[in-house]
Image: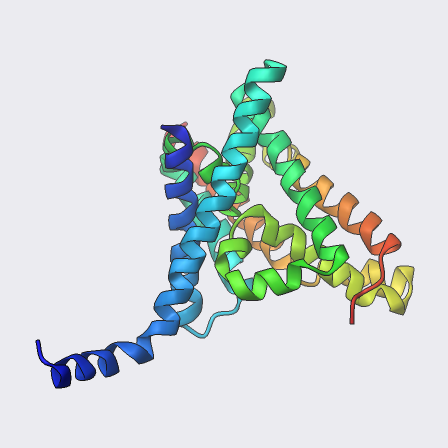
Length: 145
Length: 116
């Protein structure tokens, strides 16, 4: 391929590049979070002799603690905007959305601010998760017995 | 190799999320809700447990696992307490995630000040 062809190819590819790059970053960061999680879960299983399912619950609590803490310190907003879904889809995103909305509304008071707007961002996950779980659960009992 | 599988499964979840986020007008709130419901649907077809068996933490750390746990809670709740189980069992398995998120978010919100 000569120079002109190459330039043409570059021009064709370049507008797509940010999307492609964001997708790669999301894959890499999400994978890395899962990898770290698996390391923690395996350590828990081996050194405390707890069951696999229980280790994942502990892992979930650790993840939520760490991402809540980092959100409160102020790092996490920046990381989330850089890594996109790499940090939104893991449980880190759930904890981040709760903590950041809690911090934002704190100034409006404990009841009228924190209390009433605590689930502003995480509420939709809870609502639609519970609705889906409830009706699919009924459907599951009907289908599978 | 469970570590590599975890990377792969976790990465693929996030990749799909990012592709939805970038190519549609949906917000992160939409995507996480979609994944939660998607997890419940995968769980309904018995696929989510296979994903966990294959990818370990790569599947259990994702928000989709929340939907999986809610479905499992409702389904197993029925087998333990019949009709009442749909109501009393739904949140049993996901309680750890919900309670810890609420407690930590509350504590940190009280202690820390918003950055900007």
